[in-house]
Image (cartoon, rainbow, N blue to C red; front, side):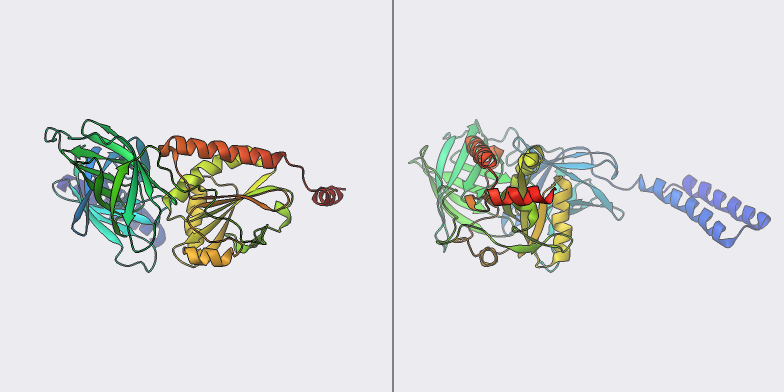
Length: 453
């Protein structure tokens, strides 16, 4: 704050006090007028506080002994207009920026209960951490440093090493864990040193990854709001690959891979199914206002119903919501309803009102959202006992007009997977069109008709 600035405000306050004494206005009014003047001074002073520069940035997370780079763009010269956009290949994810204190910013990861919290240092760099905001989740944070004007991901321009191999194509990936895990598939595209791609598993995909090939080594990373992801590997002389996948604050898995254009994941329509003797799905869960909702409610009778098991912490669930929300708005009048059952990181309805409410508002969800409980696959299986097992968030269950379960789809693969998403979308629409075309059961139609007389 400049001396001139201080002198001007001292003069204004002095004149204000003189006016108060002459006019004998009330102390309340005096206090209000004084605060307006002083607050005005503070607001102007805020303009000179440190704020990140506009442009491209490179950040690096410290994950144990590993470095995970990410890129973002900063637009806006003040908190009112500032947007931070995470960059991953062709993918863009935008987040609003808030000022916290004299020299810090706070970037909430939209519907994920986490944030980037950083200080603007004297040299213009950002230092801070990616922090879990879930109550009771202590220690779930990753420190990072970010520098303005650096657009590279792993290797600075001019320092590349010529790649020895081109690893574009489809790879069958085997990870090594204590549990038996089906192979995953990596879809990679290499142009010179630049590498982009996605890894698909039975539960979903990693979203778009961006990286590099240097000699006989490769690296990929991704950060879109949920915890960052890193892949590092070596291309062997026999053209196989070996390496390690890092899941941010969660775990690391070693893997090996073979190029295999015929590799496929297990059929997502056959992983989850109803136990013998079951045709229907039954449940009762509270909505975000605490009202108990069941599939047997009048609202759903004679309708085709889409059930989604989701969590706001789950990126593939978010991608599925981005697909379903506009689809539902377009098709609801055809005799369709949808229900999202959220399983969250705390078994608390008030917390779920906040997290699931954020999801509803962000993606303009017009179908019902219920709270199922804690995000645990075993808990989901207990609360939906008609299922043989529960494999993945999200899982889509489609119910016909008679209330019978007709299709169950495990996981969700987003648009970055190309033909896999296109095939999903095509079959989803085909199944729904067929079920919508089926007649409403006579007894339900008769009841509805009698109710309108």
